[in-house]
Image 1 (spheres, one colour):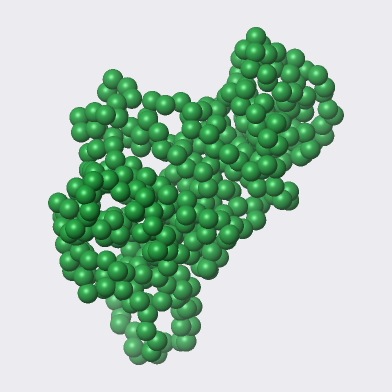
Image 2 (image 1 turned 180 degrees about the vertical axis):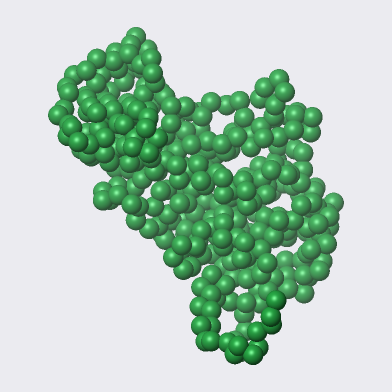
Length: 383
């Protein structure tokens, strides 16, 4: 029988310990750590993400019960008071840097998206992580609400978040969205929350295409009206110029307006894009694909620990969210080796019950088919 390290150890293989320690030295605050290291903190918090531990005491007791299996991870159990102190005091930027180091490896496993064109396709969106105003007064965004906001540019081919930023709950989506540097030739889809005529012009100059929806009261003039197939869902395909005073001042470029009647929702949509080459139906399909980023947020919130938090400071909250993003990346990294149809959610459920089991991770995500041999009727128990 072949020997295997724990499933947790195998899941962490893409993460270089040498690179982690180098980054930990860069992102260190205060005196030298004695009773526990940043690696011990990472192992404790990532274990809580993958096994749904609910509290600091829960994490401490779980690590103590598995301390003989932590040796191969290069970690040791960590006291809950020490873990709380590290979460409060040591900069969360370490895990932001670790995320992007790991992302460079995950990106090499990208698969093709569902469209014929070869351009990289991204979906841009933001999601609010709700907090209690009484416990987190620093995160106040409304009179009775506190929150932080997670901004994501999701690669639609690999379903991996290649662009991630965390901001205040009251911050406009555009503040972080315009800072993402999408590669030249890529296509980005986003909703009406990202309306910025100057940014439209900037993306066009960078060679980045976008697909969004036009605002109902947008002022524009039609420069050209292309012929459309009367049997298709495309109602019109026009070249327009946004000519309101604001649009002119911001330098809005010439754009394309596509009217589309969705056969599923029976609603009329008006898509705005700076791409004049793709078919009108493809433009509609790209915006529909934006639903992938909504599924990503739903998967993240339902399966990883970003609703109940282990600390109350801003640093503790951001530390926990960045480690949740790292955990998602690790799962997405091994997902490409799983059987077709396995989602990150399904993988997480399998990993949760086998985290410290000494089983092959490949066998866990590629289970053998059930034995189809006929059972002896005499062995059946009548009900």
